[in-house]
Length: 253
Image (cartoon, rainbow, N blue to C red):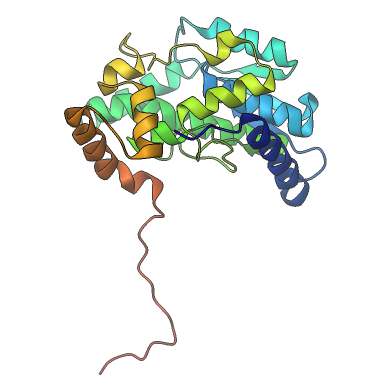
């Protein structure tokens, strides 16, 4: 892969965020960031802090019941010096799934896994409405490439600083920002199965990132799996299909 110009890209990202907030928001508008304890939300929070100041960044911690690694989220907010709220979505998720089951529709794995992400995004937009904020999308290219993200959940947001960068590149941005390594190099896990993202995917992010950037994958079976996941999940990153109708069209007789 070509050498990633981390300093140049980081400077451009900070400038882009400044420009976004200057042109699209009021002087007091806050960046609303769901702080998961993982590297993506940590780095987006650090970018926003560098761009618009810590006083305009609000972290929102959204554990579902008990979150084993929530200490990382607390520590990140303290390191950046940003204000934060903690809202536990556990009961909301349980009540909604219970209501669905009561209706006669039994929640499957897809519903159980994706519902918390969508409730988290609903909560972030509620906070944004209360304080007049803009919600950050914290996703990266690697996760989006293989669909390791939830449509209308963590894929939603008002601005997306990292969506064109691989996991490897995101980590380089984090180091350039001066974040503590413990936030950048933390092994990503889903928080549900006790397994890491890479265990669930069946391949490493390093291998995926190289394939995305060079179109080279030495393991043919992994290449086929990545291609299959990318094709299956491409609808997540495309605009919603829309029927186009113009009133100028002549009505056929």
